[in-house]
Length: 569
Figure 1: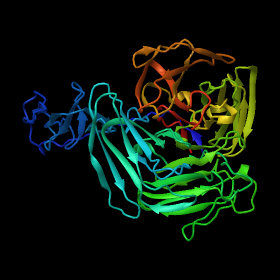
Figure 2: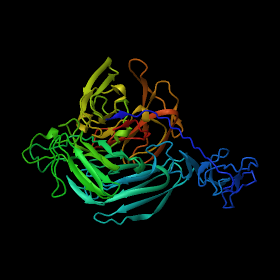
Figure 3: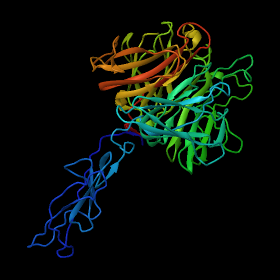
Figure 4: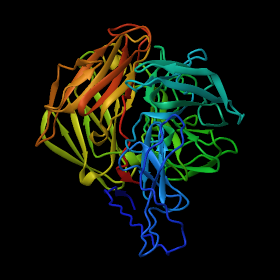
């Protein structure tokens, strides 16, 4: 039974009984800490009681963080009469009844999209073989260097190998790694062809497919392997199809991609529309049916909407709403090779997003219009349900009141089309999990500027106080869109206070402000830092050209998020 996660109170009581005369007594009661230079650690001891016998200070082997010095680990000696202390290089972290030294990549205190290990593959994006994807990594630490290493497991080869030497990133610096493996076509299955990025301290990572402005682009925020989970709902969009030559001129497919993180991972998918099979690997699946595939570590599964010859229902060749689950954590990407938004209005562009696990879906989302192009383009939204029987509240800045919509099943979605300038507020009643996804209008529907893109919204419950984000390369117009509560703390971009806020007022206390901040245009990818004393949200968007012209494209992705577990699927 699905449920919202409630705070839990955990308590532990350790009772230690001792028998007199079984253990020797230590008489030294002083305690000191060993320096980090490797000198011998010192101990804290207990005194014996000549009347009742020995009273142990601790349980042999027990660990704790020193109450007086938080970054010092103490281990109880075999006698139970003394603590042995050793300084931690980074920090000491306590669990129930134990403690350990932890590095910057080990802490569970603040799970976010910033992490130390990420996966990427090259996406099917309607581009040529020389238009490689790019994994961009940015060092988010304001002081420390980060050492990052890219690894690659070749297709049909289980031997992971380093890609060149490690790269050292200064605070706020970014680096671009080329993702050069061949993309999977349509429905497919492959062993390997996976890139893995490893860092010695938390970094931000994004996949641009491809990086440079081409005819078909999008980008996605990558999530750390540590925080990937088992349950997902896929977001996609029906692909472009030329009705005159449907089997030769098209941007199909609408698809999702899964990477297994461990051997013996069983993946299942339940589509809302028919999906294709792949030889003897797995069968086609009818709507409401279930597909299954057992995978090894770094196996890659790609499942596309079925589009058999003669089937002209092109608007429904769409894997959106497919439920993807596994018995172990997995990596999931929702995508369309090339899509018209709205359907039937060109030009087409690649869409992709690494799907946010259901556990991190929230119930309150501010949904602003994308940064302006023509100023008249429509805004297109889908809101996906993360549970059965979800009641969705929809408020908008151009109308009073709240519309209530019922979504009956997990994975089902409702579509909304609004005029430019309208901000929406989506709320899952009774803290129901929802996921709004924005689909940017295509070139011909936006004054000849930019192209379609797909971007997941981030729940207000998952906003952060600091982000490091990276733009695409060779885009004439780049923006970071910032959302905060009305009257909230200042937000800065590279130290410059954000201004030009636009109000998004709804009924009651739900009032927000939105700012579209222009960033540097053209040339190389650029790294920025956004800061505030209070949580806020950001999305990064790029258009090419900045005005009507040729070689049109766009990208959009969330700039980051907290990964607090809000929902139990």
